[in-house]
Image (tube, rainbow, N blue to C red; front, side):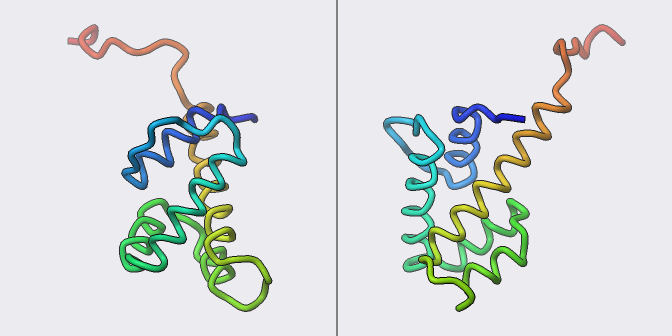
Amino acid sequence: MKVPIQMLAQQVVDDFALEVTTAPQSEEELLDLLADVVAYLIEKRLEYLMQILYTMDVDEAAMRYAFSDEHDQPVNMVLARAILEREKRKAQTRIQYQPETPRDWGEDF
C-alpha cells in the first residue's frame, strides 16, 4: 500500500517537532531532511533522539545496526531509513483502519 508523501512528512514533522517552511515533496527529500535532523540530534541531543526513537517504537535491532560497524553508511542515514520505515508502517495502519465515514459520537446518546 502506497502511503502519501504528505502524510509521511506530517508524521515526521510532528514526531520531531520540526518547523519547516516547505514540506518535502518526495520520499528522497523527506529522507534527506530526516537524516539532517538525526545527524544534529546525534551530535547535540543524543538522549532526546533515543527518547524519540523509543516513543516512535523504532525497531531496536535497526537502532543497534545503525550504531554498529556492520555497514559503511553514515549512522544518521541508516537511522533515518529505519525511522522512515516505521513511519510508513504507522501510516499504513492508520489508512487501513480509518473508518470510511467519520462517526458522530453524539448519535448514541
